[in-house]
Amino acid sequence: MRKINIQELEKGPVYLQEERPPHQIDTQDLPFRIEKNVWIDLEFRRQKKNIFALGSLRGEMITNCARCLAEFILPVQMRIQVRFCPKVPPTSTLQELSEQDLDVCYYEKDFIDVDAHIRENFLLSLPIKPLCQEDCAGLCQSCGQNLNLSSCTCAREKSSLPSSRLGNLLKNLDFSKHSAS
Ligand SMILES: [Zn+2]
Ligand SMILES: [Zn+2]
Image (cartoon, rainbow, N blue to C red; front, side, top):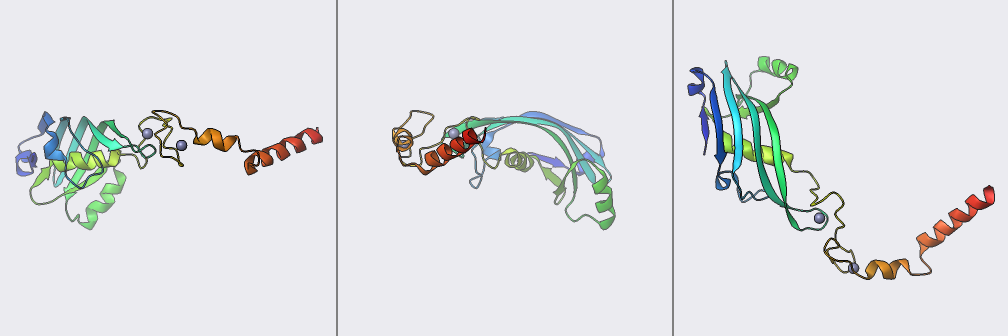
């Protein structure tokens, strides 16, 4: 675990420019895997009881596509602009916080767990519906074929049905448009 000691920050800012190994960040309960080092470039600065973290992180996670369910690599690159407050903030700082355009996090005890913070940011950057590619074709709902890899015959069979309701509807719409003009 990479810790930033709150006491140590009284002496001055701390700079972290390093790669964090995946096993330090990855935990069993995450909806993704991390297999490569995560590069962090962060400055920690203390102002009274607040700790400011500024910089960036870069890495990648392996997750499953919401459409075709295949695993894919999702690059993560984000700017970090966070204010860490003591776990239970006094009411006076709550008003202060709303004026600031920074993300707010809380620290417990006398240190900030940098790896846990990286983990949180990875979670935040994971889309609700991650897609392996923007135009992922997904799975065929009839036979389950991954349509990115090869097509199946289900779609063709369906569209060639003469009594398709949608087909009839479209024909009717088309007809009414022609008769109006
Ligand atoms: Zn996909
Ligand atoms: Zn199919």
